[in-house]
Structures are given as structure tokens and as C-alpha cells.
Image 1 (cartoon, helix red, strand yellow):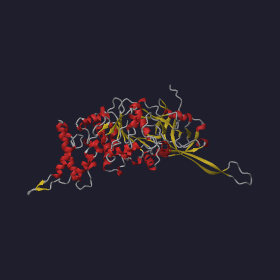
Image 2 (image 1 turned 180 degrees about the horizontal axis):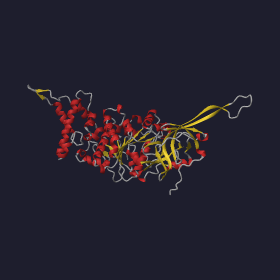
Image 3 (image 1 turned 90 degrees about the vertical axis):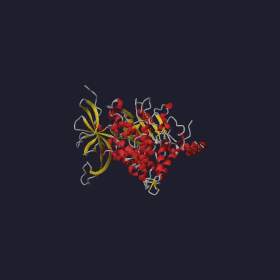
Image 4 (image 1 turned 45 degrees about the horizontal axis):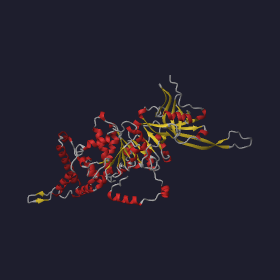
Length: 586
């Protein structure tokens, strides 16, 4: 027989008061122990006695009030004296019901589950969970997670001796978001999660790193565990490094390509789009015929990722634009003559801009038929300790950043979609600085909408195919509402902006919305963990990662006092600006 003692054991000294009012998600408590009231803060836990001696409903404090009322003094007045009025405090606590704790549940002991199976009854006793009770209670949270499912994030602020464990499966399964203002510890939280995942045998996480701040995670000399790739810059076009990643133009689908080079306000835009579509399809078909792929020829579309020579496309468009028609009396203006001039010039401008070299002037091997399978295998593979890939987008021009991120995400998702179900390995895209390329749809331009379409499709359908998103942003109010609404887990660090706080509040169940009031008060490295992955919405202090990202806040005042500007470095930076190539570090 299991003789495990009950986790929650209360004495009369811990009795806070009794239930005075109940609604569907909250409980109000008439406090009788004014001493305990002074120890209660927002976020403290309260146990409300349930329908049996073995059951407690757990509530989290969201409001504590004291009001004064006048009452007649208990001592009766002497003859001829007036009755004296004295001020008496009325203490109330309001809490949000979050779960049910049972000391015995069938053959199990000391279980906690989300949600209340019943509602508190009026006059039921309410106890503060603190000291030894709190330590034991926090200890059971996550204790039932199997060892291979446990993801340790840190410790609970309420009890620093208890580890904050979440379900790694649930955290990644249904999308998650890490949100926090600049300097709140957001990058450290990302590095910590990647560090934990790296200890697994075959992790598969692809990090979209916008500023190169996660580069230290790939430094093997200092214990790095990730593989770093970077979107190729202008300096990689002649002699690309092993870590340079190219995304050839032929990977873009029709709409993605046109969003970059078609001006929808041009009166000839429909003609330009029509001729582009026809010629691209023709050129892709020729490649398939040259590669002897008759089965693919039968079913491919203009959006299929098949290589074709961009110069041949320009030649065909030029021919259309200059060919005259033949009339009864001689040459006449051609059907497409002069209608494609602006389209061709916009395309030529992209081809000549070395910043777009990663797309329009990739190495010759990147335009071969077999290149794509090898490249995707490099990104989706997880053998040899390179399961975590950090892709540096810092040299990608901002105007094309959404297309590049969207194309890469769509390509990886499509490969996962078409893979044999039994052979799929789960994949997570970690979208750093998501507000830069996943904006609110109403604020998005034509280029950004293409990226949004790819990521929103993943957010809505990805879970079925083992493909999830981990969205990271300092401005949740600027991130697509569709994508955030699909996230079921939130690790929210300090948020000081009212608009950003309101976004989190809207995404929370009504019963937990009050918890968001602590978001601007969180210390650096503290977070509010909400969602499916954790049994109890909790304020936690995150562990510090062993390898820190290159995102530390600079000490302006101290550095101004000791460090002079480096004029030689400034000169090198000017040359790097002109050449659009970062100087090589020794």
C-alpha cells in the first residue's frame, strides 16, 4: 500500500478565510486572518477545500483589497454616553481558479490537473499555500512527465528550490512564442532552449537568426553545439565559403517572384505576368526533358522547384518586347511590343545588384537538378551532431527579407508535407525577430504577404505533419495575429508596452488574463510560462545558458569611460559598407 503523505497539509494558522462569492472562473474570499493577508501578493497560490476532504481547488491570487467600515464598538456605552463607532477592516482576496489537487485519485497520490472539476461552495475554507506546502506542491508539477519529455527551464520564483519543468513535447507540438522587450533576457531564453534540445540524440531545429547573435552557439572551440549557415553575401559570389547558403531564384514560386519584380500599378502588369508565367513554365519543361524526367513533365507546374537559366528568360522576354507583328501591308506593332520594358528593367536591376547574388547569381552547381535534394538534406538532416542549424540572415537586404524567409520556410514545409508519413522527423522553425518579416496582415506589403502566406499555412496545418513554429519577438503587437493565435504556449518575459501586453492578454483564457498585469514588473531573466506545456501558469526564473548569444546589452556609461573609438575599425566599416561585404575576422 502506498503510504505517501499528502502534499498539502494545513493547520489553522494557514486558514486565510472562507469563500464568499463564486463565478465560472473566479472565487472571492472573505479573509478572517488579517496577518496572512499582509503576506499575500499577486500570483500567490490558494487552496480552496473541495467537495471532499481529499480535494482542493487551486486558485492564483489576482487581487487583494482592504476596505474600512464603521461599526459600533463591542463595549456597551456607560449610562448617558453615546455609542462609539470604530473602524473595522474588510479584507477580500480574489483568485482565478486554475486546477484541482487531490491527495488520493484512484490508485494515484498527490495529483494536480488543469481545470476545476467542480465549483467552490460558499463558506468553504481557504488556505494559503506557502512554506513547506508550497515547496512540496511545486515539486509535483512536472514530476509526472516522463524523463524523455522533461524540459527544464529554471526554477519557480515562488519557490527557488523547485525546478520549473515543462513538457518538451507539448511545448513544441502546437507552436510556441517567446516574447519580451529588449533587454528582458529573450535571447538567453532561446539559447537555453536550444542548449537543452542539443542534448537529445536527433534534435531538428532551424533558427532564422536575423542579426547573427546566435553565432557563438556554433563555436565548437567553446563548446558550441549548432551548425551555422548564412545566406550568402556579395563577398561570397566568386569564392563561396562552406557555410554560405544560396537560395536560387528558381526555388521561388510564381507569386513570390512576381512580388519582387512586378509593379501592380503598371497598366501592362497583366501582360507582364502572363509572359513571365509562360516562359518560366516552358524553360522548366525543357530542363525536365533534358534531365530525362518524363513522369515529372506530366504533372509539374510553374511553381515546381525546377532549375532554369535566368538569362534564357530575359532573352525570351526581350524577344517578346521587340518583335513586330505582320500586317497585310507590312510590319505592324507586335502584340507584346514595348509592353514588357519596365518589367525587364526591374528584373535586370535585381540581376545586377550583388546584394541579391545569393538568389540570382548562385554557383553553377546550385542550378543543377540534383542540388536541391542535397541542400534540403543538409537543412533537414540531424546526423553527426548538427541537428540544430543557425541560419544567419544579417546580410539579406531588408526589402527582400520576407521573400527569403518565406521561400525557405515554404520549401522545407513542402518537403515535409510530401514525405512518406512514417519517415518524417519533427522539425521546428525558430523565427527570431519575427516582427521584421511576419507583420500584421493589414500592415504588410506585397512582398511581406507572400511570406505571411507560407508561415500562416505552417501555423494552421503544420502540427499534422510534424512541423512547428517557435516565434520570438520584442513587439508581439506587430506580429501576425493569425500566427500568434495558433501558438499554444507562451514564454513571456518583461513587456513594458501597453499594446504588447494587451496582445498577450487577448490570447489568454479570461480566467488567466489577470496574470498579465505582472508582465512589466518581471526582472531580467524572469518569465511567465503559460500554455499546454505547463500544468500551472507560473512565474519562473530562467536558467542561464552555458553559451550566451552575442546580444548582451552594452554598458554605455562604463565603456565611454574607458574605451576610445577605433578609427581604423571605422575606416574598415566604411569600406565594408561600400563593398557590401563584412571584413574578415582573424
